[in-house]
Length: 293
Image (cartoon, rainbow, N blue to C red):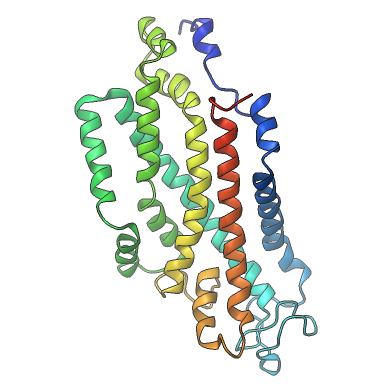
């Protein structure tokens, strides 16, 4: 393969070097979000080893213990199970669902958006009409319909969320690739006989990585929220396996007598979703070439 001219190479965005990284580091909300995600992830995956109880341990004598009672820092649930242990175990599932759904939906959306934006014509028309068809259904109803016909499990819930979340990524990537396809470095690659796959993988996708990264970050937050939503409605992760959503579902009848049962998972969901949104905002500002110093 003939080497590309220097201008084509220099057109690639350096995402994590120089002013972009400094701009991201100066984004206070993004730094707060990144810190909270690190703390939350560490708590979910390390915290269970520091607690005297696991998420399935039942102690009927400790039912409805309020927070900071004995060894129960977040209190206990109606069966006397430690709420902190269940929160951390649920966090492992909810975060894993969020990240895996993000990877799958971003991959699907990127492939479809890249093909549509690069080839154009009937390829673009056909693929984008598929995107429009999916978008014509409210995603939450589509997701609940799919969830009602499958056996609920973390893997299936992840797949359902991914299948109903890739369309926005596809639209973003298609618009970005279509714009980049007219740039000089893409035209130069075509003139020297580079293959379609080489141009898409080596020229277009690296330059479209900024919007893809931002969309992926926001998709994590959306996936966590969707998992919590369908689990709250009873179509998602099923007890005794905990998730933040079904913890909220189980807590709704005890809002007056034991409000901490809803407050604890609700705060965890809020922190996770808000933090990923903050990180997405910071990445969007840092990767926007128009605002880089």
